Amino acid sequence: MLEKMMKTRLFAWIDERTGAEAIIKSQLTEYQVPKNLNYMWNFGSLALLVLTLQILTGIFLAMYYKPSAALTYGGYTVAFDSVERIMRDVNFGWLIRYMHAVGASAFFVVVYMHIARGMYYGSYKGPRELLWIIGVVILLIMQGAAFFGYLLPWGQMSFWGATVITNLFGALPVLGEYLQQLLRGGFAVGDPTLNRFFSLHYLFPLLLAAIVGGHIHALHVVHSNNPEGIDVHEGQGTIPFHPYYTIKDAFGVAVFLLFYCYVVFFNPQMGGYFIEVDNYVPANNLQTPAHIAPVWYLTPWYTILRSFESKLLGVLAMGASLAILFLLPFLDRSKVRSSRYRPVYRQMVILFFITVIVLGYCGHSAPTPTLKLVGQIATTYYFAFFLLLPFLPKFEKTKNVPDHI
Amino acid sequence: MTDQADQSRRNFLYVAAGGMGAVAAGATIVPFIGSMMPAADTLAAAKTEFDVATVEPGQLVVIQWQGKPVFVVHRTEELLKQVDGHDEMLKDPNSEAIEAVSAEWMTPENRKYRAIKPEYLIVVASCTHLRWIPLFKQTAGRKGWGDSVPEDWPGGWHCPCHGSLYDISARVINGSPAPHNLHLMPYKYMTDTKVVIG
Image (cartoon, rainbow over all chains, first blue to last red; front, top):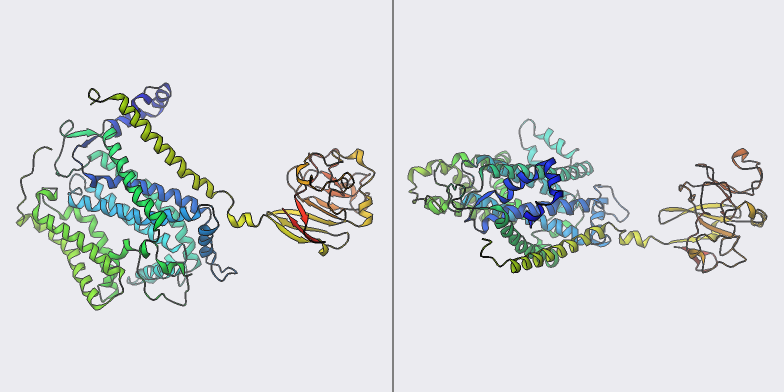
């Protein structure tokens, strides 16, 4: 099909002016990908799909959403009412909003799977260090975008979540209070905060789109890693991206959409995990909700924050837990990439995944002394995992790595 | 790969899968385009209720209908008399251009009044030229209006935007850039004085 299209006169006309043929060849039909990629390699294309869906649904929601904390006759606020209007009065508004809200969680599901795959198979190791670092930047911007977006419905969880997070900056010495006011545009979270968060919530996905372009470009320079974690060369164990992986990715998209549509149509709140029930209570700056927790995808880092008795230490640890991801390619000094041939690393990284889930569970639950201790142990391992990596090659006996696929 | 493949089966699969994909993409567009159509609360505000008894004799009131201005004029005996005697000056004296909206109640006798009850004229207050709101210059002659109106001014509206003129039944006068009389809109009397517009 693509070959036929590339033989038309219209394509020739475009090619003369854009070099489209060379791009299609180098990026698709002749772009070499290892033939042994498993389904864990589908999550990159899924993340791109969800980003597109988020931008698309977001643009349409912005046609009706109003970022104002001004009070309305009903006793609510303009922002809260505009979200309810989207749910009740706007044609298909419920669908587009649920697609967007569920999409936020789906985005993190696929991206966390994508990151886990990278860690398990050592995709962050040379020559893909920069590819990994760009990926971490994407993760941080995603978390920022999700946090900004969460304020917009102007419900209780929106308001108090934003109050807690902006407060974190207040813990920093000297500049803290200044930073906090800079973020909030006032002494407390209020109308100016809502306005600027809406602006930034619109900006960040556009940044994401640009940086994702850089991520893909960086990938296409160094090419994909593979489950064996070995270098492959053109012609030996590689196949062109198109049609082989376009089809495989399309199949992945179909399976993903099955789950996504199920949640969007039948279970959009996902039992309070994707949309927190308390957020249907309008924001009230004079009353905090009984229990506050971030949405599930931010809870692991929230637990790290809570695990420290000192506010400043907690904030720094939370920042460090994200920042240390940047260092991963340099902390891991093993020559072998894939966990398949690294018995100790394999145990460590699986325990790391479990730890993150435990951290997430702790962060989502109301704090108890037991959970606090569990969270502290998990936090310790979270950092220990990274800090042990440089010493790992000293005692890890790696298995023999095959020289070809 | 191609030498082993059954091309006709493969083409069938391409078309079948591509076709399903196209249908799905088309179906996805529906809610997005649909969301840009007027929302339920906007449609619910499509009708306006008004009590014409609140308009004093000789008074003009501007009300809103679907976000557009609407004139309600309580025409006195005197103003009603100004409707006659200048048919030759009008582009469409019998209001025949856009019949549908008023077909239900328009009778040969009230054609010149362009209203269900002659004393209450209800028209869309947008000049049919470029949607400006015309000024109400109800008395005949130039007294009070100066040379903004012609010497044989029968009384009515003057649009300051490009100088369109309408008589007291909002019928456009020859020489105006406006193509039509001020538009009527569907309306009916629910009680003696309560009007539902739209």
